[in-house]
Amino acid sequence: DAKTTQPTSMDCAEGRAANLPCNHSTISGNEYVYWYRQIHSQGPQYIIHGLKNNETNEMASLIITEDRKSSTLILPHATLRDTAVYYCIVKGNEKLTFGTGTRLTIIP
Amino acid sequence: GAVVSQHPSWVICKSGTSVKIECRSLDFQATTMFWYRQFPKQSLMLMATSNEGSKATYEQGVEKDKFLINHASLTLSTLTVTSAHPEDSSFYICSARELGTTYNEQFFGPGTRLTVL
Image (cartoon, rainbow over all chains, first blue to last red; front, side):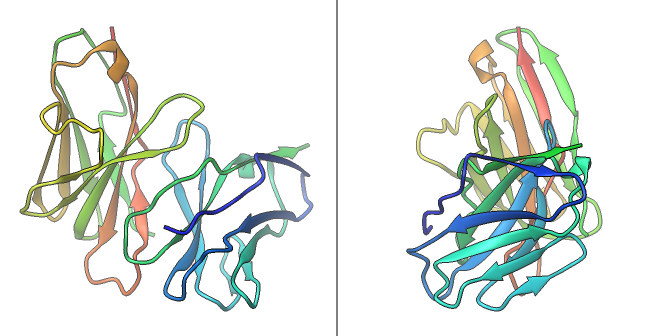
């Protein structure tokens, strides 16, 4: 797997957009960028994934740079329930390997 | 989205006993299921990958005789922790990959917290 780098922790005010960055400078052409999150004492939850185009779903948007070396997950209107550890993972067909992620805390 | 369940959600057992954890895909068929372990304040660590009808593939450092995995059907995989000891206390999470999907999305169960006394 290509290695990813994420900030250890971030805070975001409730109602604002939360922008979570991820660097993956060694990503290869057939590898996707996946985002999962894990709320305390629960299993990880799939958020979104993409290859090179920006993606949006009901949960979030994923912005991938043109060179694919970094990406940003955007939660457009953060709520207290979005407090979790967010994992950015790069993978092709192989197994999903979790790094340490970003602990996002939404502040009331 | 697809739902994965785990049973039990938590279990407490005495040292030396064996514990079985079930992982089920409720509304889809899973070609592959994965078992992870997570210690407090740490990330998920992949233990093994199991494909229906074949032997599991264990990650380096994971004892296959201690963590028995059975994937007898496309909707059920079980993890048995044999002769459990306090150091096996952890949060065990399974995930499943849907048969026939065009991309490799994995759906995770809610986890099972094992405490060995």
